[in-house]
Length: 383
Image (tube, rainbow, N blue to C red; front, side):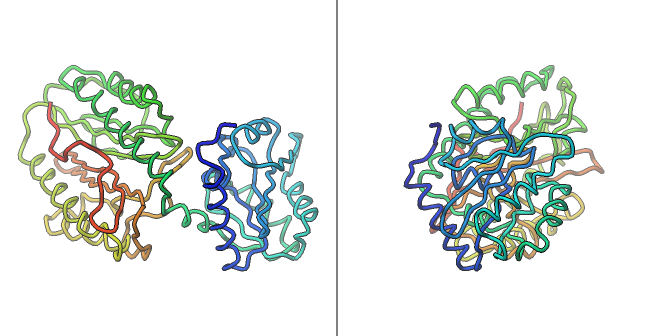
């Protein structure tokens, strides 16, 4: 069985979940987020692109409803013992299979939580589910129940996060010698992803971001590569990944002579990240982190060039994104506690001058100062 954690770890997670379900007076919980299933059972698949759900009852029993292609996947990667299949066929409605399963589990009239806010729950599935279960029981949105439990990492999870941080460093190590005038973005990207895989890591939950020239101002991956000019800028956002646990980093590399605007924006990013380290501690909130970010950027006249968030929680994530629900944005009341893995990024995209500057790394929160999971300095990278 391909489990990444001891059975005692899964037992402890289930007890935490059952306690939260009891607090919310839930008789059962329908998990649609692959991250939730992985955290609770080890179940590892990309089969969530089709209908599947894990039914967790308040007595701790679990039943997975999925397709035949994932039967062996569940048995080989998870602690799930009860696996039922819905059959592919014209006009199939697996929510009817789910309704029958819930009836067999004696949940008629029960209060049932549902993970709606996840990539594993399409709009069509949500409509089918609500139609089938409208009169079956009391259905409530429990999208963030497991997500919130996953915020604080166990020692075993932290070990994977540290490994992910090491792999992120190795990816940057592989890229730096290649970054120079005339270099092909494709070679840089291949070296970075190759370093993670060669180091025993996994594919990330979303593509690495690479862009130079005008594309250095983009915050998303796009198709197409270019060759670096003698004077250029290259923005990179990537993550080391170990057992699906991510540690992200972000840098903008200046190729050739630095101009005043690049130095100015880098100074703002460094000042901001340093200031945020002072509030990335227990007793503060995610909103407090963003407030520092906004204040520093706005005082430097960069309001139009900054983003409306400056990072997010990281953990074990699946495609299409390594971002967790909990983000650093205005007014977010989520409290910071020890043993969270949080990615903080400074992103300044000055479209007026065509200048990009970014600086970001993943931290492990402690009872005091946050610990960077990278050994690399925050110095401006040049080539």
